[in-house]
Amino acid sequence: MPRLLRIATGDAKVLVNGPGNASWSCTGYEERQLTDKYSLRPPGSDVVRTFRFQSRWDARDTDSADHRTHMAFAAEDGSCPSGFRPIPRLVQRVVYDVLARDVTDGGRIVPMSALDSFPEQLHKPVTGHGDFRAAMAPTRRR
Image (cartoon, rainbow, N blue to C red; front, side):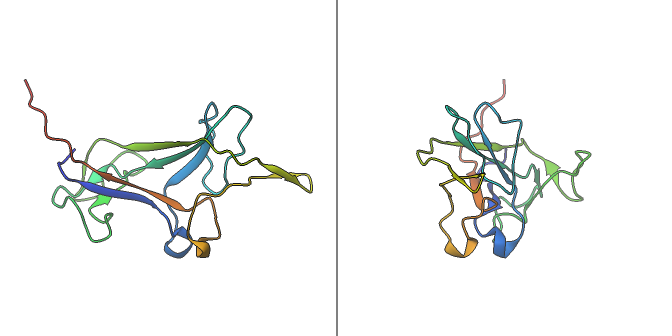
């Protein structure tokens, strides 16, 4: 990982800026990843927010004005966009111990929690972002 590399993924203002790259799940049920809904957690389970970071770097810049354009996602076949090279793939997993209970409304379950703080984003589950900065000192190879 290049030292001082900075990466941002997802978007706290996704309703304004476009799709993000984050998903929701619950502990014990992480094979089910939701991008447009909050997870309804079974008793004893916690809410999990997962951010997948770009794993292709332009091999020049450790940051850019938007913290994104110096990075790219791999193509579906795993290849790099032209001018980019692979770096280790980072996944950020945040577990929330949500105390609010879900309620039943007209036969459907409605979560009583939302994790965004921008009113114009309507507390939609697609919002949210993760940041990363590679600040570790390089290790010496033996």
